[in-house]
Image (cartoon, rainbow, N blue to C red; front, side, top):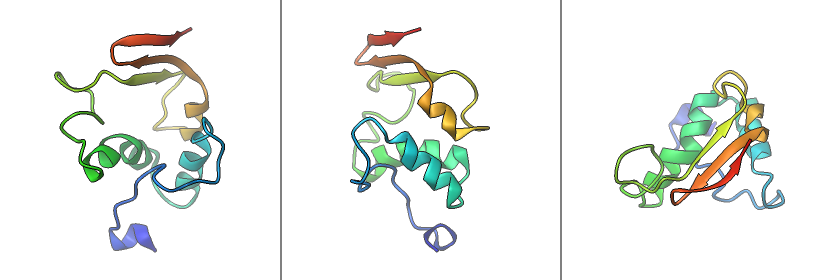
Length: 99
């Protein structure tokens, strides 16, 4: 009911039922409940950043913002489950994972 009503959906803000590091499950459930994968990805990034007042610091790939980014094996807009196949992680310009 929230989606058709235009309610802003933030990913991970209140899930509390998954173990740390298993947030991909929430993203998959958001798609199961009717969100398009691209909407879920925005919810987890730019929408969350703007909603919590950090849109001018993070949430998008843009010069001057924090350089936190992941890469997955495949195109997540076609299959949100690919979020479980992270092959690259960079936070604050430091690479933490590279396959």
